Amino acid sequence: MSLLTWNQGQYLLDGQPYRIISGAIHYFRVVPEYWKDRLLKLKASGFNTVETYIAWNVHEPREGEFDFAGMADVESFIRLAGELGLHVIVRPSPFICAEWEFGGLPAWLLSYSDLQLRCRDPLYLAKVDRYYDELIPKFVPLLSTKGGPIIAVQIENEYGSYGNDTGYLDYLRKGLIDRGIDVLLFTSDGPTDEMLLGGTLPDVHATVNFGSRVKDSFQKYREYRKDEPLMVMEYWNGWFDHWMEDHHVRDGADVAKVLDEMLTEGSSINMYMFHGGTNFGFYNGANHIVTYEPTTTSYDYDAPLSEWGDSTEKLEAVREVLAKHGFTPDCPFPEPIPKVSYGKIKLTEKAELFTDAALQQLSRPIQSVNVRPMEKFGQSYGFILYSTFVKGPRHGQKLYIQDVRDRAQVFLNGRLLGVIERWNPQPLDISVPAEGAKLDILVENMGRVNYGPLIRDAKGITEGVRIDNQFQFDWTVRPLPLQPEVLAGLKYDAGDAATVSEERREEQPAFYRGSFEADTLGDTFLRFDGWHKGIAWVNGFNLGRYWSAGPQRSLYIPGPLLRQGQNEIILFELHSAPANCEIELTDIPDLGTVAQVDDAVLNFANDEEE
Image (cartoon, rainbow, N blue to C red; front, top):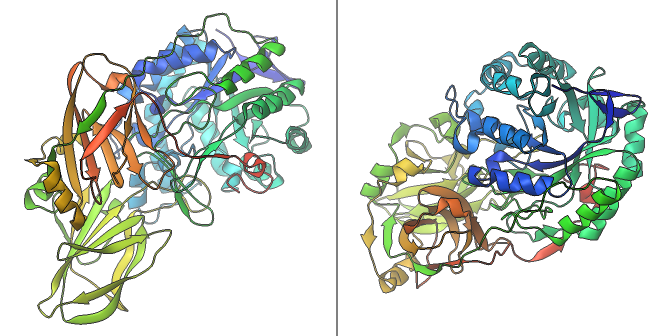
């Protein structure tokens, strides 16, 4: 049993001075088979603590249905960290940001039109309480006061960047205590007046988040907290990527220099991220500062430990600084996990989405007078198809989607009219013959906003579809969450590359399937050269999105997702397959063209996402 406290500007562990040297690893971004590898590499780099968020949408994906198995088995992750000799910081905020879908909030909250997020709205608090009743008791036996590894627990997350309902923060604090949390509680916010005023409680330890300008950030913190220990709960040592941008990197020497400054000031630190991992499935988030910016599948973050678990030059620079300040590992660094090149694989089978057989397998039609967001149909992730019949004749008109969330492909009588994107919501030209025509609109949810005032981010079509000023009514709606168990029943037609090449001109969304044999198992990377945009699965596991818009040029496949013998690859291609219908599994990752992170991004001088 032990207890983390603080007194006169320093942490005490069981009454003795203590410095927290922590690194962030999110259990939900790493396959469970690799948890031990990543945690050992953290410890073998000189760290004494691991920090993780808790993602509500992972644990309650459908309202009232809870999941704590597999990648959601957070208890096993925490217990394993303790067995390896690491302390644990848990951040079970209802909201986590983390560039994670909806900041970790479950999408079904948006089915309640009147529910207000992240405040003392009674309906919202009722949902939080039910979740906490399931979640928090799981942590109590793992607290340091009960002999476990958890030494500190966070209340909400960067709340001062969103609101000022400190009564809400106090409600969460009391909820944690009443459910048995008796270790150190804390908040974390940017070092600005607004954020420290709105996001802290006077009787709860406050920590700060930033990536540079150490003295300025600590000076602002000290204006509010003169006697508390310095703790950078998120030291941003890299940055995340958006589609249609470059891959962000930060020089390792600069990271080491800023770390040295923090430690010289006497601060404890949590490196965000030590190991970023992957936004598997549909769980990537998005930002919306000037426009909508979806986050890539890779969450490599240019972290010291790469997405695939390899050491980097940045990690070596960090280890040198930690050693300088007396933090040296007491265990060897694990060997790299083998990478395997399985070569090129032809996806020889095809199932077009707009066939009766495919649609009947993947969805059930819902009749609706109006188009409505997917949450109103009980759907959280994936795609949604809106279909109607448009009377003719119509000549030289414009089709508007009001508003698209996030990317719509519009078809008239099965032919692509064009694409309407949230970040470029231009109308499409439309003409309808006298006999009328079927209108199909396939909308992709590319990830809900995870930070800022626009997190209430319903998906699909939020208001309506117009031809000029005339709204169209009487729709057939098909939710397409593309769950693996439903996808498994899809029927494919065998086709050769020539047939596919001819049909690709039609730009029809379709599923492409192939297989490969694996004698040796190891990590590999799926290159999607020649493919346009879509989702990839291996052996039924959703790897995430691919997109030729970049920067990411390959998807990481952890070795435990493969099996000896035959393995299945499926791509849901939204536009057109390459003529050869091939993907490649290589042993070399490719995160795209790089760009240095700007210093202004790494601090809260104006805004976290400046």
